[in-house]
Length: 469
View 1 (cartoon, rainbow, N blue to C red):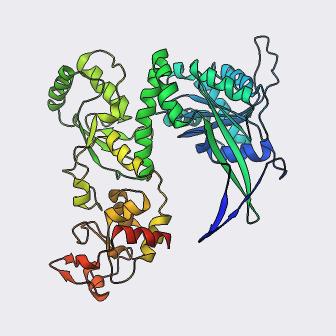
View 2: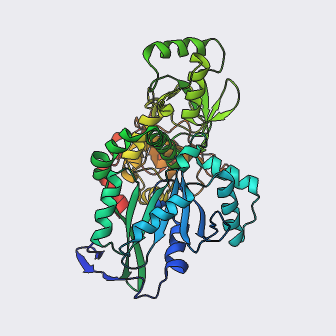
View 3: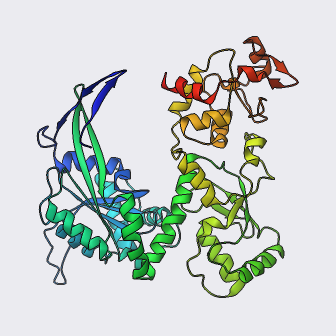
């Protein structure tokens, strides 16, 4: 980010750029703590395992004198090695990161659980070793895979990078090492310091067109990483957006990784026993599917693999299980508008995630929704779909939130696309006896046979402007 401005209407004032060193901010006490508090700067769904790790020893038991800044675990099951520099990175910073990656690549679940327990204890949180193991296992989408621990991803965060670092990192990436360069910048905005983290390499375009093909061709472990990344991204997007309420029924439709003949065999096998075709969704990123056939919780890919093996007797190769489960729109969850729910018919978890991810609504932050509803004037109404579009979400989580929110302003002014009160509407105050139609009429909106006057509906473009107001 080269330029930053504080905007007030038509005027824009340049914001002064500063640095951590200038402001007296340190790597360990400040930058490191920011990263620990906000691990999303390291990539999607990273759990911080430990920081300041220095318990290395060689085969003679002599401790090494190296200190790993931060060690994380992402949802694909890979370790994330983080090297921090508050100023311009040293010319050999990538060598430090590679050294730490090599050291942690020999860690097993017990070593990581012990490190996590010690890290939490140093921060005043007493957690048993077994619970730490479960936390690590539960964070991974799918089975725990020691082979993936052999391939840590590296993240170097610094104020700037010399050319010898960027040049070497590009080459190492082409040689199938995962190294991200993240630039941290500091700005002074109206007396307040603002920190920014920008991933400068690899950019999304480089990842898609340059690095990904080389990784896919490298070996089976890289393929597993990619498959798990796709699966966990869909699950994490859906959980983060709150698109599917707990209890949503999903229907088995075998797709990715199963030839047509095997799909037919799976379909026939599933029909032989009640529950095999159905899973119930819970908003749990690790194992969100409760299979009705055995009552056990699975990840989408884990359940698809289990079903594939049960039918064929052999291990599946590269199934993307999130494509195997469609929303069963015949069963409408409580509090959800049936019309909006019907729009999800025929969509699997991947396509649902793309739909919600493309809108930018992958966070459960309803501040914009509350702001927008507060600005919807008396005598006007809008729809769940238009509100969702304006705030970058989806109609279903908007409706689910409104049905359970006790602080949402003017919820009766949000109607279905046909201009009717949703069957899932609930008053935050259960003692209210009037209907939403009564309130809308009192505000001047004509209601004819349960349908609000379409002339009182706020156009989407006006609704977007209300959000800005």
